[in-house]
Picture 1: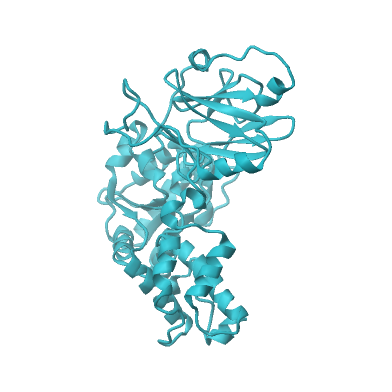
Picture 2 (picture 1 turned 120 degrees about the vertical axis):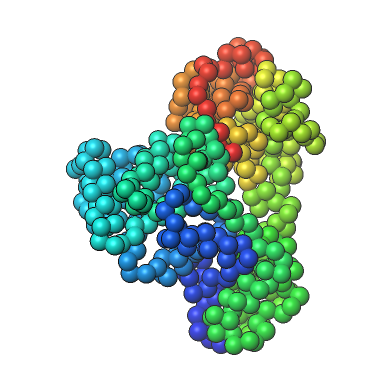
Length: 447
């Protein structure tokens, strides 16, 4: 094992959230302090957000390892559940077997348990990780739980941790009462270049480097350039670089090893890659008369639709597309995206194949699976769902001319196979299709 060559007691860059390896940057220290304050103050929620891999779960595990024995904890990690399933999960954490209970009995049991713990001098803490996946109805149940109190104090402390879209849910009109109970809210960003170097040195020291320079100093700027300071990506790159050095029987990591790791992982520089690929197609969310402004009313830069370099290269190296999507906003065609064999993911963030920059579109909203003789659209557990043929659907086979409505955007599916084989059909114009794309339906901001 490479730890012997590097004279380390344990691997320094494992992805598991090990509190022993926690590096407390200023931001991580502040987030941890906010979490700890929940134990002493019961007058509101603490909300911690951060991108994937930013260290939220490690902070939670560190907090749990440091709690006093008089703190009773329920930790919920599976959050794609109904409100009843959520209440059952909380009770399971407290030692109950609630699966035959109805909702009223679940709530009564929780109330009684919390009051009993308070009377016994114990504090009760509920930690919900990946809270951005909770439905609005389940979040409302969380708010109701937070209201359980004696004549003096609230009896349940609550920490919500999740990805940035959690903030958008909390700010939605349906959750005004819950948002008013948020006492502290903090976003955990990526590490700076200096913190990235300190983070790597810290983990090596915990693993047993004893001050030895295992990574040469010139490697740190390169690691930061490709990881963007995201702890999980730093771990992945450093681990791979150490393996590259190990294969040459060398006990230090050079720039050439980091570059070899980058090549092996097929990464591009972090600042240049949405989702580790060239820029995807991007559609701006239009809410003004001209359609060329952001939701805050500031002018957007550049065109509304970008077809990335990765797609351009595919056009040159693969056969003709089997189908395409015409993107329509407010009756205007703003671009199109060819569909070839495989999977096309559509959502709000840059790591999607088609990025729709809208507060009504989820991070990864839906996907289209293109096969030789068929195309299927599938909802990826989005908040607002997808509509095809005036119906909200989870999965739908697409026919030529079908319109997929996502938030305030319409995607018109055009089957190029039928056109090439001489088949005829009444393909609606983008404008006409947009006007008949489906009924109005309630939407929730999922920024």
